Amino acid sequence: MTFLLRPSLLFFTNPEWGQANVILATIHEFLVVDQYDDFEQSFQPRLGMLWKYPALASAFPFPIPWHLVPANIYLWVRMAKTIAGAALDKSSRLRKVNDARGACGLHGPPPVINASKVASRIICPSLPELDFPMRVRPTTFGCGPIALPKRVLGELDPQMDMWLRRKGMKTILVNLGTHHTMDSTLSLEIARTLKQILDKVSDLQILWKIMLRGDGQQEDIVKVFGPELFTQKRIRLERWLKADPVALLDTGKVIAQVHHGGANTYFECCQSGVPQVILASWWDTYEYAARVEYLGVGVFANKKAAPRAQNDEFLAALLEVIGNPEMSAKARELASVCQRNGEGRVRARDLIVDILHTQGSTAHDNFLEAEAAEQG
Image (cartoon, rainbow, N blue to C red):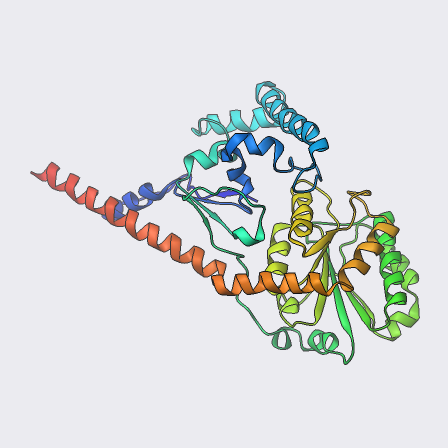
């Protein structure tokens, strides 16, 4: 996700003109992005965006093999052509949105299109060690993963904490994101794969946070696992988790997380040192799948089946991750990098406060000078 911090309408009375000048001085000051390549790819030398980095939603690996470079260039060109065509087509959603913005006095393209040119500071929750190698402009600040303050799972959900800490058991967390709902076909394919790995690995238990689309799906999933696994408490199906997922990861009892490739989950796993199994399903989730494989901290588990899942491919990915001490070591190494760097939310806050203080002081001084000139 990308956020351009810009107020649209604010009201001020006469005594507040100083504060108004402070805000005017910081409009378009900050742009918050998910990863470096959101706005750094286009600034890479030798048109690196076209041949070096995977095109958005391409599911290509990094580095891109030479035989895929022509296809990668084609995808970028096709995307640009599609966006340009939508901007010119009066019936397109993009054109209607932009016309509505113009009617409200907001002229020019939507902020996301030229945001990197408008914002003088870009804040990114990534770090060079967590991303593809690329040249990053001095105005782009990598603060590291931005996560909620750490809280103890035992205080948030004592029952879950006890289950995670069951003697001799290791846990896989399956969490495909709040917005990812599954139809019956996909949920049953995933369930069959999870059942198989539970049968293969006797000291494994699985926590599955699952968002379902229709009635009866959960009953069908329960049948796949069978009553014995539930009696043994080796499988838990939860529609919602009382504790934030990062609290579970920080227990050190989760040996892998299966997720959809969302930015938040990716960075939480990096911060907690947990290997990742990604079932990518849309847009930039394919980029995060490529990242975990490039960094050696996870597996792209549906390369052939995306945006769905296929039993054999998914099972092979799970077995590769849970039986790979080298991958676990690399994941812990990334966690150490994040720890040495400091908490991302704190570093981002400090930068924003520092810039606001500097810009605010300058704007206030300019206001006082202008006011003095008027009175003089």
